[in-house]
Length: 367
Image 1 (cartoon, rainbow, N blue to C red):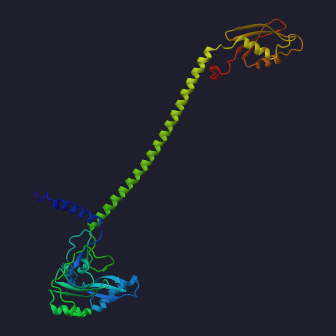
Image 2: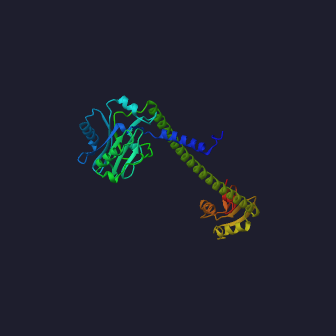
Image 3: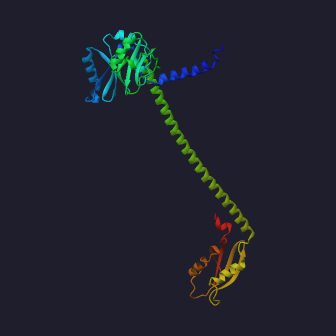
């Protein structure tokens, strides 16, 4: 019970979850270690070889140098030289059985030499422990100059022979007391290329999982684009609704103002008389129709209920009834003029309705 609640167990669960998620997102093949006893090192000159022919050229050189019919290798360029780790792939089943690590990877397994799956030591001579036995390594300028595998811890004579092979004096480089254990790596360092016929193909389950992830990704992208487009359409519709509401509010406010102004004018119109008779007389006198008392004169005047009845005395000679009525219709106070029948000889009678005065409610809103 206490172990389940321990801080170490609490940190282990998220680590396992993150490892599972990383394995789903990382489509690279898992690295399986080729034991050091099965792989060998060589340095080959590649300065005059085009890059596109590099792998084929290295395979051909290794087959000629080693006599192996099927050879696999990993290589990296360094100062015009190819640092190569190679191995025999003639017995593929036995070779696969000798691979270490990798496990059951969803994305397949790629074999890599054991020295590439551990941290590189520094410059100088080193004795490094391997999965089986140990390895003597001489590094200079960041590249391996000599390397030798021992099934067991080498004695002084074997170590001295390795030091001489490097070109150094054994007296100045005594044998280490124990082999050095270096940290393991999940994958080789950047720059290493692999050429082998033993890479296991990606299983059908991995392809199905990749297709499912791609389908889900496409669905998420399509859903996001549709949601974005729908959001823009909704925003445009909301902006249009806001504009219409603003215009409607302005129209309603203007209508309210006009209604209030119309009511005010109607009330004002009701408080003032329709037209004063004195104003009518002044308007007729100012029109010039009755300014000559010897030709046309006003005999009768009757104003009742907003209507006016007038009787004019006209001369017998040189009088034109049409011109007279035309002059009367020009007067703005008359809304309509009708000629009265059966008036005495030498007279003309009219009945006229009065037009509403300018500025009144009736004049502004005629029916």
